[in-house]
Length: 361
Image (cartoon, rainbow, N blue to C red; front, top):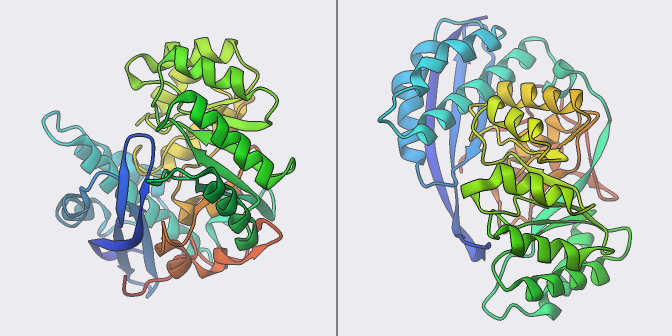
């Protein structure tokens, strides 16, 4: 099978309300969709979110540069294709985020075609380790009122929608106020509700230590990216020595070598390298294996169209992280095989590829 055409496009869908994290705000769901045709009549599909507002540039890079590496190639040669694309990310004066996302789209597309050529899903291609995984909803964004009552209601609503846990946004208020938010979600969700927090690098080491100390006994599954990026590896390692709450990071790394540095520094318990930021699923799988060899867990951050498969193929994976449909209307529309939820879990019902279905955005 050979790829005969590749076409990428950016999309932007307005959200019904804004979503405010510790130091950022989302008003639209932005992303890039890529499609490929092959000489055997098998089509491939992939998409990624666009956190940086670079979708048009990323789509152009796929169409003008990365497609030249793909066309004529057998997509089952996915790892060699990934390495052949690598020179395109090394323009020292270019925006590395654009190149890495473009490489990621091309890589994810090849994995989709590789699985479809075998007549199987990506889960089966990689080797299924479990038939279902718990749902963790990324939620608890800040609102103008920041009402604890509203947060409690949101928690209960997520359970009704099929969520088994929440990754709560923190870092946007004082540490004391954020601790109260954690307590509110714990009370509303109950003792068995999976609860993690994500600070998006909002705190100093002292603030992060204050937070984890105040949250001891609240049953946090992990605290994600708790410290500023300036000195994050050293600060994460220091924080990890001072708390029993698992530390999750890796999202802001763009290479497997960066993940290795976190592991070597004993800075993390859970690795969450982002496939879009790091150039694709191929390096994500390498980082996941590195984590396994070192006794660590892996998590995803968003991109449920990928993690719904990857977490089922990783025995050391955590939850499948998704968003409320108001925050991400694309996943339920394009991934119906994984949108079915049973008692707080997503099951493997995908038949071929990633299970991504093309339609008008």
